[in-house]
Every structure is written in structure tokens, then in C-alpha cells.
Amino acid sequence: MDDDDRPRLRLSEGHFGAASLLAGESLDGYSLDELDARIELLRAEITRIAAHRDKSASHMVAAQALFRPKSS
Image (tube, rainbow, N blue to C red; front, top):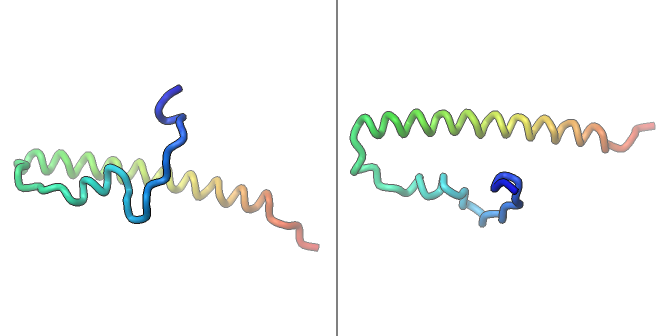
């Protein structure tokens, strides 16, 4: 079984896994090139997360339409 297939524990309120760790990390030790590379990596990750969120939202809308009570 791949790690992606395993159930994940829900994180506590306000804690978003690795993103929470990145938010508090000191950037003083990074060079300009390292900061630029990190920005590009984070932008790519934001794009990936946004696409996954859109897909999840689409599934939610489809499920709500499927299970919505029939109006008479």
C-alpha cells in the first residue's frame, strides 16, 4: 500500500502539517538563489493544492446534487 492510500490522522486546528513548519522557519541562512528556488517550489505546490481543492469541490457539488432531496 502506498503512503498516499493510507488514512491520514486529522491535524489539530490551525496546524497544517509541513506548511505550518515552513511558516515559522528562519530564512536568514538562505542565499538569494535558494530563496528564489524555494519560492518557485512553493508556487508549484500552491498550484497543485489549488487544483486538488477544485477537484474536491467539484466532487462535493456532484454528491450534493445526487443526494439532494427531490422537490415535489
